[in-house]
Image (spheres, rainbow over the protein chains, first blue to last red):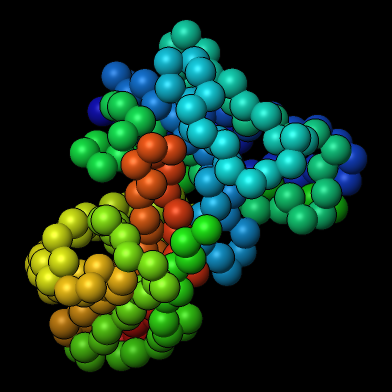
Length: 115
Length: 111
């Protein structure tokens, strides 16, 4: 079975541009979460979506937004890119949003570089 | 905000050596997960520890949850080059269902 897939794998943008990252969860998984991992640090939670509704939001500015589609895939959008947005963006999926009983599966991420 | 501190930050050892990495918090946590992240890949769940004092083994990896539920350790016996990677501990926050990750320990095992 296919795991969590993310596209693109690498992306280079310049300051002020906008970017859209895509995530397809494991088949049957309805919960998708997004994390930002800056080089040398652990991932930081950005958003969680379940059944197309936002269920959680981390401490990120309004330039960051996301949505989930009827097929449970998800997009993360970042506007007005800053140099500090350079990071690995990870998507994770699970059957349900309660991670205490359901393991979370991560994709390999999109490496975003801002010039 | 509950913070997780991991130590050491970096560790470079030779094949066959033993090592321990630590994950500490100033607050009590209900459960904790350990992940390994290899270069160019996403984190992969190794184990979830729930009960204070709990010890879990996964082949050459031994995970321990402190009695006071404020710390955890990961011990690797006879490290191999395949153990190379970033080891992350993470808390689950039940209501928000999000993971809060530690700062990570980067392990390099050489021949």
